[in-house]
Length: 261
Image (cartoon, rainbow, N blue to C red; front, side, top):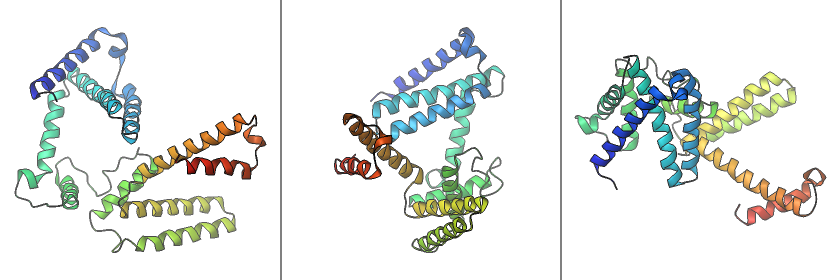
């Protein structure tokens, strides 16, 4: 791998390029924090897709795109004398040192769980930290990820099931309530109860150390592979999916499963 000096030289080169682009490129010159925000979100999702596919070359590429945005924001901050890349790095270093007292202080933390608990408690003590346990969960997070983060933060202060298996009683309870409200035919209460059911299933995933976002995305990709197989087989037979019975579709679906798709 590259030496520290080579890495720093490349990073310095990137900073120089970004500064020049802001001065000379019409598109880069007109960008603002608000105009870049959605692009930044898109770049992060592209990175997560590369990670899910374990595509190391693409991970490196997408990390570069995310880093570009960090450098871009820092350059814009320096132009208004609000902050620059040094401020960004210094704030991050200060935070990492403060939140790792088991490395840079005298606190003991021998397991990942203990480190995480210390991290959350220290966040509340920081001068600019969150005022409440859940206030650190961004309101703009997708609902599934937000539910997971809410539950995880509550766990860090002891608000959690005493035994993992207890969560299944809650899942079954919520499922029964969904069925009851469907029988009653009230759309608003059906939505509320399905929300409760999803929240409890996400909670179960967390308790059994499974990230529900990753699990659901892997299932999405699996469904896409199998459905594409079904569609391709249907076309080869000169048929249209609308002409196929569910029983005929299931034959191809089972074939896809047997092939490991």
